Length: 281
Image (cartoon, rainbow, N blue to C red; front, side, top):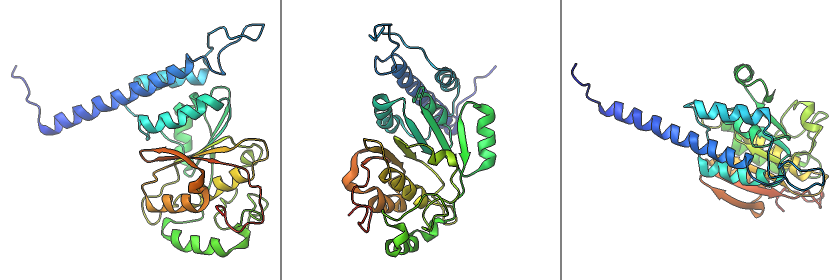
């Protein structure tokens, strides 16, 4: 039988598959490194000393199995994942809020063992699809009342609206600021979030919701924090104009501590001066 010659398309497809497998294995190794690290999650003896072992959670085991056997990889690259992973390694178990439900959700839940990880998703059909595959995830539907095409006008309005100022903005009880996400589930208000990842909603065409409300709401959650410490906020796709513009306005570049690729990391302290007119003043 004559050997089949590979076309350029075949070679490119093979290269893409190999690249996907390589990235997947890297993520798996990163996850396993977390499982076997000494850190807070190491099991302890009766005297409180670390025994050097680790009892993996069912979510972690499912994550290992999933990423070791799939060709579908997380949206973020390894360097970006590692940035958030390093923080989770320090503060987990924690309360972790993620805007978006995607191919990386099982990974994020697995990297926060014994913590609370909640995903906010705009598409109820996608929630159903993902939860059928991964029933252990906690995903809630959230609606958006904005469009990307309104981003510039909304920013001008919010700057002049006292109901959107740090000392006046309300996240629930009929919020009056247009950028506050309407009807967030009560589960969101019941916790203080130690880490927030903004990787949704869609923001790449004019009719898309855009991430204006997600960024504003994350900033308000962080500044209304009561317990000690700062809130870690990660924003993805910062190469896009709207994400960058709203980050500078509400997350504040003075709070940016690091960034890699398309991901920025902010550490936002609770507001101490609630009379100020803007989030970054």
